[in-house]
Length: 474
Image 1 (cartoon, helix red, strand yellow):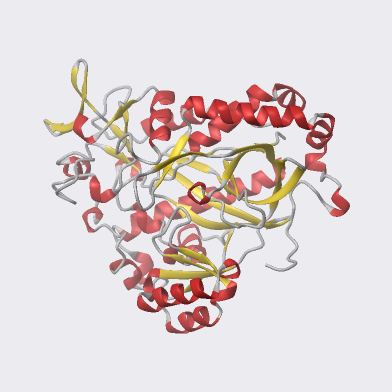
Image 2: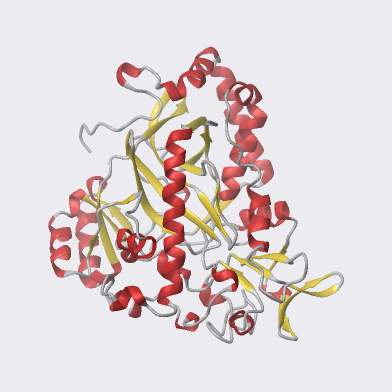
């Protein structure tokens, strides 16, 4: 991508560390490279022992991999975080209001701010949710907002993950590893805690319990099972919350309540943190062949006798075409301009935009509207002519299935390599918990890093790694 200059978060002009990193850099320079390399290997071994892996799906069977962890932290100042915190809260409140609106009065469609066909013809829109209000009015109990940085004060939202955002277990394990490996750093540098996330998650889910709930509410985590790519996380979160980890065959509807099988017989469930997609939740209402959910679960949910987190139908807010309307959505529901900006986005469903995208494919990033994990996309500047031609054919065949964005100059944070420190591109996924009582945003979140030099793809499924994210105290 030529000689593009990227904003490096650790080093400023003439390779001097920025004030934010001075204390860490001083410590780093005093450490021997042998010790740091040895600790990196120890961290990898610890992750293997713990089972912190994920599955990558290819042509054959799933391939289980370790997510690489880099020991150099990413540091964010209290001032920077305060702005991000305000912007993220504004955004998730607007998304929740948008979801309620499109499943009820659809005021934003009536106003003409969003074309009706963007919702009506969208496969992520769930007609079964029309007229349904979840307990407490919360649709987005857990949100992951992907943010990139392009300059000193330039933070941009790349996408919203309002369905089933993953990665929080890696954030927590990264911090645990850093605390264990480098305790002296946390003595000298004031870093805000993230380790209480699961306490906040348990509390937040309980605050969303339906009116018929037990006291205290019974929370369970629904997993598709051991072969799912994020199974480690499902198990990890259930364990840390003290909640039962259940699969579809453990659940049944009894006397108008969802119940789970236990050693003491079937016990009612009040809040189900489900990591199963909408279409597999209920064979009576969705895919009849599904064994991942429970028959009748949507009926008791619609009756207000169960909380599903996140609510079915939230996938419409993950849609990358809807994302392009987020500044409008924020202003419509909050009456304020968006604090955090979007990436400029061309909707290929619009003829003028399609023509522009096809003419400039080699300069753009083009993504599937419903794609995730780095799949179904192309980064124009890094693609071959043959790859561009193949992708152009896909876009022409189904224009409504794609959006395009400029290739952003993502910020870099150094990683530890054999020669010392080397810059690599990063993004950030803060995790947000929402209940009728509050919005809680983890100070920091998961920093994903593209480990290949020059690569902009940070997804774990595409070879990316992770870093611990430090938000400094006031």
